[in-house]
Length: 439
Image (tube, rainbow, N blue to C red):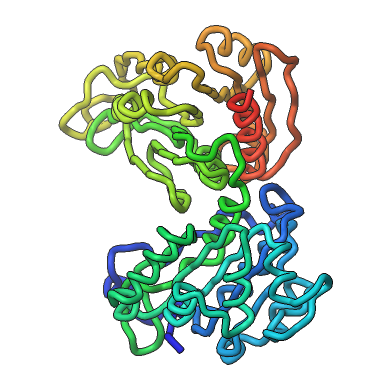
């Protein structure tokens, strides 16, 4: 069976690896895992074929289950050579399916699974599995389910780079995507199985599989196919070659919003100031540093955006002059004055460029009178609604993985949302945007 991916080996020097990221970071904090849309209440068939990357599918099965999906794992005969069925039973609470001739609750097992699935995901999808699916074979339970289902099908290829690059594999993938409508996530470049070096063919990380399944499950969202523009992070306004004006924004909220929009089927552009967060899978990332750079990036794209979410903490001011030499205390003495000028109002300018019917969402971080100040900002800037929260409160605002917010709308009384993980809050915000687009 085709080899796939394996865990990174910390003993190898990182500079020997290709420039592409080896993995995608975990987007869901461990304490934030709970049932939530779009996974909650859905039935997912997770097919596992015979590659070393099968170990990653145990984590994917667990996360899908924790997020509220009912997960039916289907193992090919070769898959059991790499991972034990008991591992999947332990994380899903359901016995994995293996027999081609099994009987389900409502008839033949392959038909029962195929009919009840809201999504079928194959991870890893080896070269052999892709070839059999592309030719319409039904020689094991997983292949039969793929042939019988009418649910969205997602494949996460995993194999060595030579097999992935082979014209036959590429032709099989093209047929599955363009003729049968399969969706594909990955592979990525990275370290492959022992002795095979690095290259394109490594299966994406379990967190990416979970996100991609969520996107497949949200196919009827009002955001499907919509261009969503999100800003995130701080801006840094240089004073001299080593100093800048900035703020404590981490970008976590904006990155969570971009991920939530992508999961709902949107085409997402994330314009981000300096941030240590990793970009969500599938999102176009535009990195900027200053407010003027963010303005240019946003205005260039606002005309094609049906939704704009302004979560960035843009610096209100910038130094009037950027010095070419480092400021030295020995030369300035005990104090110094720095003349500043106002930065442009990016949100207001971009609102004017958006197409009619577009939805524009603002954020307001305040230290006092949160709702009153958010109402004033809403009236001045013409947002569809504002997400307001407090600064200086533990577990909220800058740098935290959680947030508490008020939703301030022109046509409804302010609503307070409880403290929750930022990715969960991002989902609630996207639900509000979906409602406005549908309306």
